[in-house]
Amino acid sequence: MTDCYRHPGRETGVRCTRCERPVCPECRVDAAVGFQCLECVHGAAAVPPPRVAPPRTAPQRPGRTDYGGPARADGALVTRWLIGANLVVWLLAFAGGDGFFYRLVMQGDAVAASGQWYRMITSVFLHEPSGFGILHIAMNMWSLWILGPYVESAVGRLRYLVLYLLSGLGGSALLMLVNPVLVVAGASGAIFGLLGAVVIIHRHRGFSLGPILAVLVVNLVATFSLGFIAWQAHIGGLVVGALLAAGFVHAPATPAKRRDTVQAAAVALVAALVAGVSLYAAVHIGA
Image (cartoon, rainbow, N blue to C red):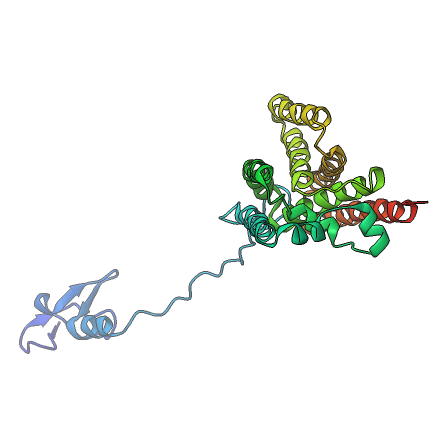
């Protein structure tokens, strides 16, 4: 027996498990094993706990849409841009009058004779600055707002924009091939491209095709029954949009690089088809 280190004359047989000082019942604190003296307890409390590095986590990959595009919170941004672009061009045509309008319309003869290839795409954003033009752009923009976000959220922004523009160019190409003297303006070819894409995406997802096919049939009937509609632009856009959508949805899902490569090849092939039809038509106009 020895005296407590803080109370001489008070015998104890217990020692601190850390420093081995003899401690009486008043000067000891229960520890996980045995007892500790007050100095050891206070000293341990004053020492900051060791810093533990946070667990390392693997970097998270950005989310993807169903068909490979980067997923975005806003699935209709490009659609709004396209609607805005159409409205701006329509206002410019309204302010610029016939001179502005006829410099941008699609006419195969002008493309072939003067090399004005820009007409193939400017006409896609152009609507008549007349009373009928208001109805025309209103119907096209309403259709774009209904169909666009669905396709955009499914394939991603870049693929969606490529599909829209190439569909419009496909309509211009077929128009130049079949009827190069016809003067045409409007986004209907691109809209029909979106309609064809919706059919392909619906089928791939296993959705019922009844409602969308009914919409397509109604539009095709209107296209061929109304004499003032350029069916060439509608059919050209429909075919191009369906072909691109098929390339997007049927590309292998994994690995991601392979899917991107297959989809890029599909875009290149469809673009080459549109370019080939356009060049063939330009060469044979007036021949």
